[in-house]
Structure formats: C-alpha cells, structure tokens
Image (cartoon, rainbow, N blue to C red):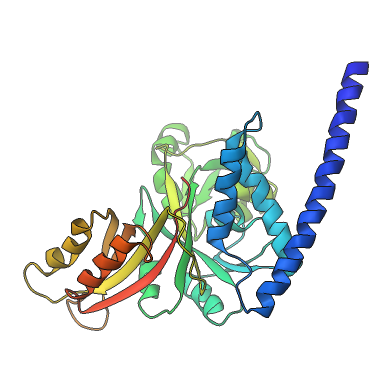
Amino acid sequence: MEKLDELRRQIDLIDEQILKLLNKRAEIAIAIGKIKKAQNKPLYVPSREKAIYERLKILNSGPFPNEYIKNVFREIISASLSLEEVQKIAYLGPEGTFTHLAGIKHFGLAAKLIPLSNISDVFEYVEKKRCAFGVIPIENSLEGVVNHTLDMFMDSNLKICGEIYLEVSHHLMNLTGKFEDIKKIYSHPHAIAQCRKWLSKSAKGITVVEVESTAKAAEIAKKDATVGAIASEMAEIHYGLKIVEKSIEDFTNNFTRFLVIGYTEPVRTGNDKTSIMFSIAHKAGSLYEALRAFAQQHINMTKIESRPSKRKAWEYIFYVDIDGHIMDENVKIALDNFSKNVNILKILGSYPKGEK
C-alpha cells in the first residue's frame, strides 16, 4: 500500500509539471497569435499542426502509445487556439453525425462547431466568413462520392485545406439498452444499407424506417423506448442512449472521407494531395491527352470523378485527386502541361494527406 501511495505521489508531481508546461505553452501560443494577427496571417495552419504530430511521434520512445499522441496534442493545440480566438467551424449537421465527429477529430473540443442543414449552407457560412472553416463529406469507401459536394466547388472560390478519414461503425441503440424493447428501427438510408445483412438476420420482423440522418434517428429514439436507432457512438453520447449491439455494419474497413474547406492555402509538408477540376474538348482522346501529363511526371492519380457541368448539355466537369503539392516541381510541370490540353482548369487546393 505504501508503494502504491508513493507511485501516486509521483504521478501527482508529474501532473503538476505538465500543468505548468501547458500554461507556459499557452502563454507562447498567445504571443504567436498576436504576431499572426498583426501580420494578418491565419491562426490555424494545417501544415504546422501536422508537423507537430509527426515530430512528436518520431521523438516518442514509449511506453505511451504513438497512436494517441495526436489525440492528446490535438486537444492541447485546440485549447491554445481558443485562447487566441475561438475557431468557428461549420459542418453538415445535425449534432451527433459522423460529420460532427470528423470536425471534433480534426479541430478538437475547444473549437465551436456549428451544425448546418445542408452542404450549400456550409459553403455559404465559410464564403461569408461567418466561420473560419467548413467540414463536409466527399466520399464513402462503400457508397461512393457525395455529388452535391463536387457540384458546389464549380462556383465556389473556397479551397480544400485538409481532409479527414473517419472509420464508420454503426451501433444499434435505444433508451433501455434492451433489444426486446425495440419495435421499430430508424436510420439514414446509407446506414441502413450498410447494415442490411445484420438487419435481415438479427432484426427480422422489425420495421426499418428511413430518416434524413443518423442523428435524427437518435433524436427519435431518445423520445420513445420502443424505437431503436442505428447511429454513431457520438449520437449515443449526445442523445443519452444505450448501445444494444455494437458494430452491426456488414463490412469492416468502411471509411468516410471529409474535406476541410476555407480560404487558407496550406504550405507543402512532403506528404500532400492536390485536387483539381477541369473540362475538356468533346473529342476522341482528349481526356487521355490531358491525363498523360501526370503519368509523364510519375504522379499517382488517386481519384477521378465526372459530373454534368449543368451549363451545357453533355458537357462534363472532371474532379481529380493527385499525390503531391502544387509547389512540388514535378506537379508544377505536370499541371503546366495539363493546362494546355483542357478548356478549364481549377485548382481546388493542395493540403496535407489525412490519416486513415
């Protein structure tokens, strides 16, 4: 018992040292914030934040687990930023959705996350500088791309400042935590589709109802003990529900990718991604001729999507992600050659790659 007490005293002393260092760090962060404001520079710099995480992971000798380094320092950075100015972040709501969770994962708990009803509103809030950044879904590894997000970039001057990967895990929950109390199950159509096998096997005879979001399902379940909701762990916490069955999705390794949008243009980190939109002449070989510029510079193209331009019949806009930053020499050369073979080229942003 004496040994345990002594070890606890050591922990207390270390905690006191950590607290002093946190306050010292906060004082320096405030000083940096004043300099940034005087020079009209953005307070939040994604490349700098990523560099902090990567440096600390390299320095970490254990036994503190490396995968939690980012979680701890994200909250320290988030709290420090709030001393300079509370970051307002718009996101596709409502509260308790996976987009909400993605926003917290990226900006931390000290940021003020503002839920909005649609993707258009998120763009508008950031464009009008009501919020510093926005968080929107762009694609799911099973369900594919979010077309509305792609369409919004056609007429927006906002840049992609970052990306967030979030593993999607669906839980069945209700007020009591008892399966036998559930008479109806509510959720978003995508969540229902991703849990189809489990529902057909384990919830036979229970009516499944589609609603506009997993958070809406949780909100309904909060008011009725006979309703089960398929939603995220965030919804469980936010709406005070109890998990009946964890991880009922049909497939593991299901990720949703989110974009961070704003006016900031992150500097090169060495592990970046660049997104572009373009249109081409409607003739044979034009797409091949354009994309060949990336192959010639040995640049990996990680995504390509096409969308109707909505301006002219049978005219399409292409969305492409490539590895690298616009300040990389090979990317500069590739984009220069690429621009010669397209009608319109719009660079949506170069930004640090998100961690999966």
